[in-house]
Image (cartoon, rainbow, N blue to C red; front, side):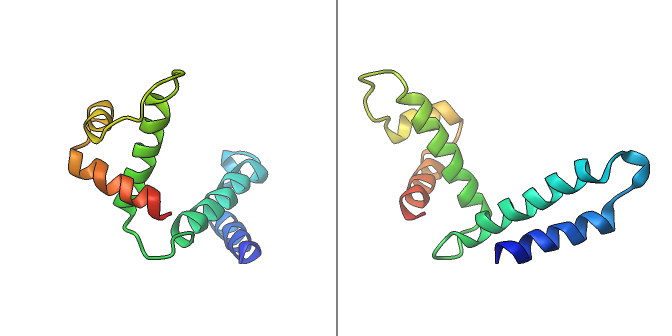
Length: 102
């Protein structure tokens, strides 16, 4: 699957490349890498999870890591994460559920 995804990225890079903007490699590598990342983002879930919930998962994961960096720091509450991220507690709860389901 990954070879096919990378090949699709290469085809997209060839189709969209403008020679006046620089070297092909500097355009193709990010395009191919983006296709592979998109593949993992969309296909690694056991169930189809909306992209918004996936984004919430990432925000919650990063916030938890940031809030627990100090030695001896307690596990942050939903309210702590909501305050840190600017999300609502409902959004944080959805992100936490997605985090545990990935």
